[in-house]
Length: 185
Image (cartoon, rainbow, N blue to C red):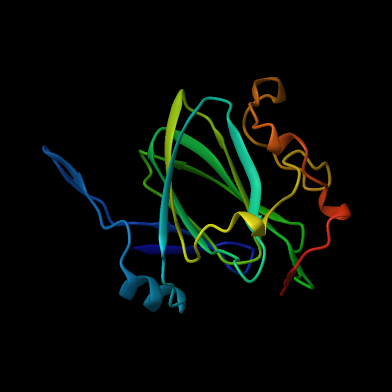
C-alpha cells in the first residue's frame, strides 16, 4: 500500500496495490502489520459498517465524543463519493480545516482519520456502497455533529445544494464556532 500524507496531521489517504488480469482484480483492503509499519499506528478495528446511498445523499459531519471517540478507515465498494474529514481538535494548528478526497470503486482509495475529526460524505454517482472500519463501538449517547454547510468550513461537496438529501437529524447540527469541542490536539 502507498500512504499519502495530507496537510492535516492524523488524516491520510491509502492507495492499495491492485493486481488485475482478465479475471478481474484482487487487493488487500487492510493489513494490520503493514498499516502499523507505514503509519506508526497500532489500530484495533472493532466494528465494520456499510451503507448504500443514492446520488445527492450527504451524511455528516459526524463524530463520537470521548471516551467513545473513533478512528475510521473508509472506502467505496461501488460508485463514487466525496469524503471529508474536518479537524475539530482544540489547539490544533489545522482546527476547522478539512481534507476532501474522492473515493470510488475505480480508484480503490481509502481514507483514514484519527480521533478528533468530524466525518461526512456526499454521493456523486447514481448509487454508492460505502464501508468503514472503526476502532471503537458505536455509542449513541456519544454522538456529535457539526453542520455540513457551515460557511466557515467552506466545503465544496461536489453536488449542487438543491440536490443534497439529508436525514432529518443532519439538518439541525450546530456551526463549528458554536460548538465546544471535546477533543484536544
